[in-house]
Image (cartoon, rainbow, N blue to C red; front, side, top):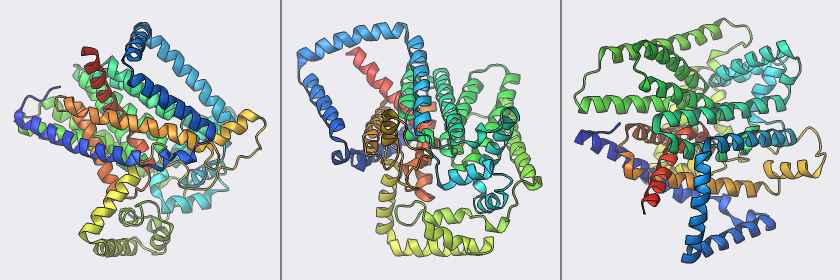
Amino acid sequence: MKANNKVVSVLFQLIAYFFSAFTLLMIYGSIRSVNFNLSNLTNGFFLVVFLFVIMAMFFLFSKKNQNLAIDKILLIGMFIRKRLGLITAILFLIGVVVQLFILKNITVPIGWDVGRIFTGVVDFPDSQESISGYLSLNPNNSFYFFLMYTIKKIADSFVVGPGSSWLYWQIGNTILLDVGIILFFIAVKRLFGRRIAYISGYISAISLMFSPWILVPYTDTIMIPVISSILLLYSYLIGSKNNYLKLCITFFLGVGVMCAFLLKPSSVIFIIALAIVSVLKGILEKKRPSLIQIILILVFILSAGLTMQGFTFFKDNQNIVNYNEEAAKPWTHFVMMGLKGSGGYDEEDSIATDSRPTQEEKKAFNIETIKSRLQNYGFSGYLKFLFNKFFSNTDRGDFAWGVDGTEEIPLKKAENRIQAYLRDIYYRQGSRVNNLKFIMQCLWVLVLIGMLMAYAKAQENKLIIIAMLTVIGALLYLLLFEGGRSRYLIQFLPFFYLVSGFGWNQFFSGKSKV
């Protein structure tokens, strides 16, 4: 999909330019991250890092060693290329087994919102009063609660018991994450081809499969399979020539997008970016939408609307949760909270908003506080605040693991050295957790470098421009609303990995021509 119109090309170049500017800022912030503080590493791991750097420098500054290494890499590359699918499948299956082994040894209760929803589901009906109070304050988590409640009910109809354990939920979370990685790979392969799919797929798998977030069954990680499913449906939509099939795909796409919205409202930024680029491209190229395109848009709106109405009807008529509509935090609360400190969660702000009895009073208080904080900042102060918040939103490749909440306290003591060692790596209070954070930070910087390298050819590809605009929209959203933690980036990671894979493909393609 190449943009032939000059004005469209300028528009695409402008989007790519702003994207690259944001990416440069993210790289700068990531290099300065506390995760790169060598004093936090264990002595043994530091020695490994030191030796790796020495070997890398020895390779880079020795032409003879470079040529020898390149020859060996090419030979290995030829072997792998012929069997890449099989090798990838084997590595992925090994990765899943390792994940399950890790989870079995480190499973632990998680606090905050995750813990509230878990308790609300597994202890129901005893938890009805407490979960009703929680969801009245935080109705944005309603869809996720009912989803988990339904899954547990179905699971209990087969085998009673497992659905009440943290290990069960964490295994389910990990399986969904892995399915999301597979769907992401298939979608990228259909949209961009085999090479970019493998690069993006490996980036996503290595970054996520062994991260501490496999412990957290929440809407952050669950968005990976949801967004990947939407990308896959979109790939089938634009690749199909059968109008009846397009109608079916569009219907399910509308359902999927609305489910994503109900889980994480900000996750639909991709659809907004897609609409903006498509509409502007059509206007600038003076192309009128065809009849089938108009019908597809109407079907999408209809299916999304029916999904929303269906859930609203269910929510209004169910007797599981008793809602107090006046208790809900309005959207203005999250804008207000996003203007304080690093722009993240603030308990004082939450208590202040919750203390107002009606929606009107909550909004009035929020708006008054927003105005006051903006006035106190002034223009230059607010600009400085935005830069600091931007870095807080994007600088950590561990996605702020351990920043919120309390220490992980397992239900049982470690039974052996391996279990103790793994807990020491994954628990926030563990002496080796900073080693894991260092590795994740290195991976994050590599992802960002790949994104930066995508600039050169991005203007020629509409889909990459849409992905770039999605990332820009996500970053702006987190600047406006509650942020302050790179955890909020998890829901958008498929687009980060997609653009990064595109960029690294350009890099490797250039090297192969030299």
